[in-house]
Structure formats: C-alpha cells, structure tokens
Length: 518
Image: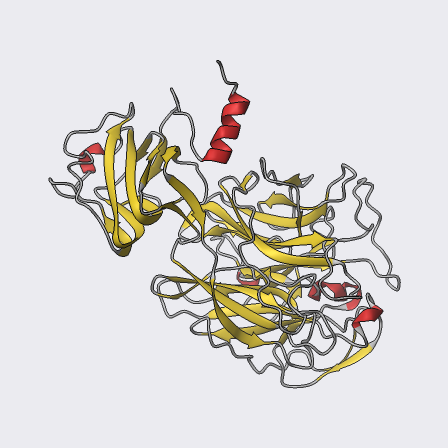
C-alpha cells in the first residue's frame, strides 16, 4: 500500500521519525553549534524522543514595590551590557505601572507607565540606580497630574502626545557596526491614540487595530538618556498591546521586529507577525504572520523572540500564551489565564511548535494571585549567570490592587532547552547527510551513572566508515558541555571534513542537547 507524503509527514510529526532525505544536498553545519530544539538535522529516531526542559525555579530576584511601580508592572527586558569577554554588567528594563482604586473598576485602574532601569553583576542581585532624570510633576496618559519623587530609577516617561511611548517600551543594545553613537541603544514603544490627543492620519489598511496605533522608535547613547528618533510612527500595522520586540540580527545583517497582531480572517486570534528593516526607520510592509506548522491555534500574547547568542542562526521564542474563557479568581474582570510556551525557528518566520505543553507554569497559588491574565510573562532575553548556566526570567503578578509583583528567575544548563532523550532501555537516532568543518566532534551530554552515549560516523548512504564505527567508539558517560567523541584511533575527524556524512547516536539513560565540530 502506498503512503502519501502528507501521511508520511503526519507519521514523522507524531512518532518522531522521518524518511531518509533521498538525493538531498547535505546540510553544511561548518563548525557552528547545532541544537535539537527542532528536528532539522534528524533523519530517523528509534527509542528516543526530543524532550523539552523547563527552567528550574530559583525564586524571586526583585520585588516591584516602589511608588512608581506596582501591580501591573511588566514588559521586562534583560541583556548583558558589558564588553564581550569582560566582566558581566547586566541591565534590566521594565515598565512600572501602579494600580489605583479597585481592580473591579477595570479598565480605568492604571497609573502612569514609566520605564525603569535595574542593574546587576550576577543576574541574581539587582539594584536600582539613583537617577534624577525625571522628577517633579508630569501628566499621565489619562491627562491626570502625578508627581515623581527623587531619586528614582526612571529613564523614560514619554513626552507630549507621545506619552504612551513609555508603555510597552522594549530596548536593546544595537551591535550593528554602522550604528551611530547616539543610537547605540534603541527601543520601540507603542503609540496609541487617546481621546484627548489629535490622532495621526488614519491608515487605510483594513487591519482591525485602532486608527493611529503604532510603534515609535527611540534611541540612547548610554541606555539611560532616551529620545525619540523621529516624530512619526515607524510601524503602523500593529495592535501594539504586547511586549513587541526589535533587535539587530548580525547574521542576516538586518533589524527584525516581532509584533502582536490580530488576524484578518475574522478569528481575531492573537498572533505574532514579523517585519525587517535595514535602518530601523523603514520597515517591510505588510507584516508577515508567523507560521506554526501543525501546532494548534492558540492566543500568543507577547513576542519574546531572539537569536540564541551561541547559535545565532536559530531563533528562540519564549512566549506568553493566553487562555481565554478560564477564570481562576471569582469576579475578576478578565476571564483569562496565561502561562509560557517555547518555540524555535531557523528563518524567523516558520516556527517549530513541537512542544505545545506549558514551558513555564503559573505554579502553586496560595493567595489567588498566580492564575490570572498576564501572569507568567517571560522577560525578553537570556543571561549567562554562571559557568554552564543560563537564567530565564518571568513576571509573577496578579494585577490585583495593592499586590506587589515579583521577577522570578529560573535556570537551564547552557544550550539545555531541548534534548534527544533515551530511557534505560536505550535508543538511537541518525542525522540527515551533513558536512562539517573541524577536527573533533564535541557534544553537550548528560547521562546517569549507568547511562552512556556512543556515536558512529557513516557515509551519506548510511554505511559505517571504518575506524568510526559504533564498535570503535569509546563509551561516553558523565555530564559535560563539550564532551569530545573518541574512537579506538582517537578523536581526530579532520580527514572527513567537507565530505557528506551522517552521525548515528546510540543513547542509554542519557540526554544529548547539542553538537558541534571544533
């Protein structure tokens, strides 16, 4: 009985194995790091699975308890502001939003949004710098007066009719070699037309977001003193109400933005679109909706997508997922709860959502504050906080009156988002044909005391290469970020560099997270 390509694709998706890539050009991985966040390199699997690893909670690292912060504080961004290879200097930006009155008065309960800065040397202990950039009396987005005390850690509140640019403000450090000094730090902030301001010329786009909404561009020479890059919106076709992000993609030589939109197909499903730019001012049009292949349609609220710094050809997405129709707290105005999911991409548009389960759960709810709309919202950014350790952050808040949200930290091993995992009985997988550059194969592995990893190098047709067969391979066990594969003749594989090969891995009670040739 013949099986169609569509049916074979379903078998691949559900059972974790694929047909050999007959006649396909070998993938050239050079010496770059390759993760198993997707099945891009995998040809066949037997007795193993790709396993998603959630961050291990380490507890709160900061409470947003200042008068200009509060229950609706969010949109956290973290990045290393230090010199590459030097002492870490971590920056955290967030939008402080206090609440006033009773949360049942939604939606007119929020105080003025202000952009705040915190700093750290280790990613665990954070301090607020004593700044006096914004002090005194200001007017909020509702036209009400408010007073900011000094000192504080506020770096932006918006100006004039663009007071909204402090809401949904997300910055990054621009590594574009052609970046101007005064714009070494860039940010996007939303602009939403308010009743008491003159709206921009309406956009005849047919998109379902409010006329006049969009994203503004900001710049700073030092990450502290900010100004608008221009008086007009850089992106108009966006819903804006999310943690929209932008960054310089050094591998592809362009700026990329991810912004939340509602689809035009009548479903009003919250989703994410992407745009690109060469100068940060002029962006591709129209936005391109992300493709999640066969994943179920869900409300994806925030857009925390970034190139993985150790493998910039791979985008990682740490996304807040909204689940409408569920209300944990009785009489709360929003019948929605949220958690965080993980996804990845190799082109920035088509995303692998093999893992539809929650990546970060809201957790134990002792005070009826965890299972609410907007909780468990991941920060944008990853920090290397210790040897072999990555830190991920997320907001833990309830958006209830007088509650104090906290920034939670979780850790993963370096490259430890997804592994190829084998249980005690063991299993194996084989890669598609590939070419490499280097003289040794290094692996990020973890085994039990009885576990093991062995690797065989085959030619493109799947025939074991003498000297590199499974029987020749030295059994490997332990826990290492860069374990060198060895055979009876040693670890040298340079004579195979540039030639089409396959790798066959045999695992027992082990996880394989990443590989690279060095």
